[in-house]
Structure formats: C-alpha cells, structure tokens
Length: 88
View 1 (cartoon, rainbow, N blue to C red):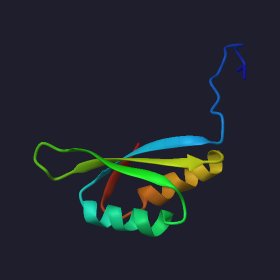
View 2 (tube, rainbow, N blue to C red; view 1 turned 180 degrees about the horizontal axis):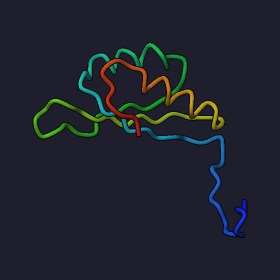
View 3 (cartoon, rainbow, N blue to C red; view 1 turned 180 degrees about the vertical axis):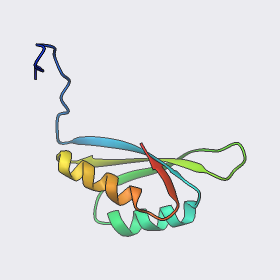
C-alpha cells in the first residue's frame, strides 16, 4: 500500500497469530476471564513478569485472528476485564 506521499505503508496480513501484553493487578480474575471468554479458541497465555513491588503482573496472550475486526474485538474484551490496567 502507498500513502498520499508515495511512501510505502506496512500492511498487516491476515490470518495470523496476534500477541497482546496484558497488565493486571488481579491475576486470578484475568486467568478466569481468559478461560471463560476464549475457551472455544486456541490460544497461549503465559506469565511475563511482576512489578518490583508485586502489585502488578504482566502476561503474554497469543491468539489466532482472521482479520482486523476480530483483533479489535479481542482487544476490547481483554481491556474490559476487571483489574486489567493495560492491553498492549
């Protein structure tokens, strides 16, 4: 794809595995909701690290997405889980 200034723009090709980083203050709630919301899909959910004070933890969540709409929908679902502070 080329933008209006004739510069190449990277495009995302689908389907593909998409990776999210989720930061939460409640790992149990996050794990429960991930299982509840995505139990019919194949995904990978792994601990990443814990904050220095132990209040927050981050997790890598990888899932197969078929298009931008599905990717955005998953982002919204993850963002709306109680005690999730950020989804990147």
